[in-house]
Image (tube, rainbow, N blue to C red; front, side):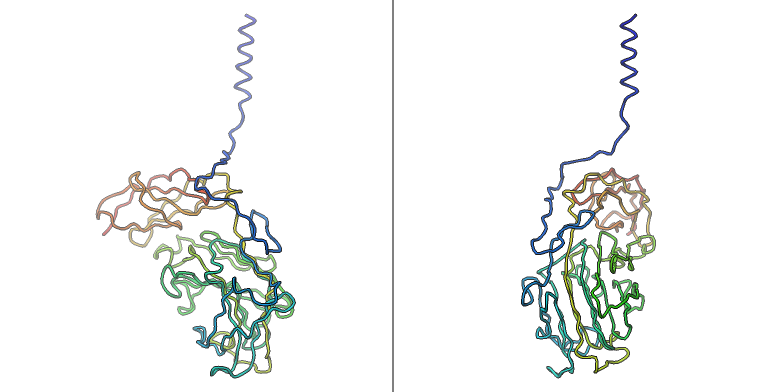
Amino acid sequence: MKKLIILILMLFILVGCEPEEETVIETVIPNGLEPLVAVDDCENPTLEDGWTCIWADEFSGDVVDETKWNFEDGGYGGGNQELQYYTRNNTEIVDGKLVITAKKESYMGKEYTSSRLNTKYKGNFKYVRIKVGAKMPAGRGMWGAIWMMPLMNAYGGWPNSGEIDINEYVGYDENRIYTTIHTEKFNHNLGNQIGFSRVIQNAETEFHDYEMIWTPGSIKVYVDDYKFGDFNYVPVFNSEVPYQEAFPFDQQFFLILNLAVGGTWGGSQGVDNTAFPSTLEIDYVRVYQQDFATLDKERPDQPVGLTIGTLKNSIYWTKGTDDYGVEEYAIFLDGVFHKYVRMNQVILTGLTAGNTYAVQVQAVDFVGRISEKSQTLSFSYTA
């Protein structure tokens, strides 16, 4: 009898003390992604949430570092009827700052000179956090910009492959900064570009921190840690077009710094010739990427909300969630892998007209961990 009581008591303890279910933490990295190491020349090598500096210029040398920057020389007008001729002669390093100077001078048939630099093929980025310390140019007719263009134009020429204007500043609109994106669906040629603006203090006399955080389906823009721009791909509002027409920001872009004179926007109220010389000053440029190999420990959540879109043979779903973000989605038809897509929309092609398919979606994070497949959506293909 005593043995029976002891056995019952042990069974009670074993059952009653069973631990609560916990989140499964995985240590193996399926795709072999290596941890990031910060570059040596970044004064602030890491930021909160696991951002590691992968590219930087602190402008600590005597001349522009041409292993990082290209000069764009020419008087082509920048596609905006700008008035300057771009030349490297208008850029110098002064007291640890990159200084671009716009001048009133005749050169190569133009009445003004300035500079434009880019990182093309020397700094190409996707899904990054960029911080730029900058002081804006003073004077009516000045048009300073910190912006990005696509490396390979994956979806065609401008605006189809996108443009990201982290900050633009026109001198006649003193102390107001602008951030804008341009895409095939939303651009200034159509008059429907998506943008935000904010008035700050002393934009022309003090340095401010301009920042962009770019993740899949999202671009957020900050000034001095205040978010004033928020761009997101929302398929329910764009279901009539392929995702890239609304949000083509799933490819590499490069950074551009320039100071234009005049142009369709910067010169819309004329040019004040007494404002020259005028300068755009850059204290630092730092580019960060999240260290997924070190940080990402969980599988993505199961995709939900599969919906047939307005666009023929298209399906979209709610953006996937993960501890550090979803990189892409695997599409399955009748249980068989079909293809990967980078945003939460798929357009099915090459199937048999009139057939019905069981569609499922699986989220994949940056280290290759996969979610459970979504619930099945029954879909009839149309030729």
